[in-house]
Length: 278
Image (cartoon, rainbow, N blue to C red):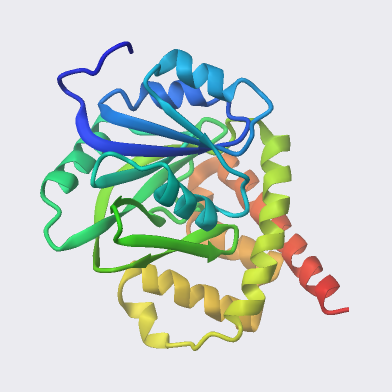
């Protein structure tokens, strides 16, 4: 894309990358409706940056060492100087379809009292949307007004810290969970299990309010995490929760494989907690 289209929206998109050559071109092809795209790269050793520039010559590229998602998002907000008031975080293995893009534009045009918006994704695993055992919809604050939202580390991900209200965008985007293959997925989730073990230790000391189970979906999920941290969630319990209670069996054979992998990750978390207590 050599020049800005008349249909491009006044929105800045920030993409965090590290060795995303396999994903970045297709990701950017779904963002041609956006005025500004910023790449914050963690010193990729592949062709991530060159491929990004070939698809989007006007892309602005920065590099910063990755510590965790919360830190990297805050660094991007502080040092890349997005030119628009509304900022959208997108990962390279995510794809925004037309309906999701339209919902984002509507939210930016009519935010009401909200300083940011939670968004949800469809998790595509082995090229199939596994709706049930991935606990759809799962919410993350990805769209925000500059200066109103910060992030802090939460397990392998991040939690938002806001100065104002947050709304919800219900049109999902797609997450290509296996875009780099199953071996990379397993290696990535091995690292995630280390972060989750650290989170379990912290959550055990946070106050527990059972009333949160019956309110806002974000508060409900955080309450469930605190309960799980206190009473333990073994691999069998994890599998049964995802496969039977969350109806993962309706996701077919791929759902079964996914639930088994999640149970294996729970084994890793418990082993790392045991190692830390020695």
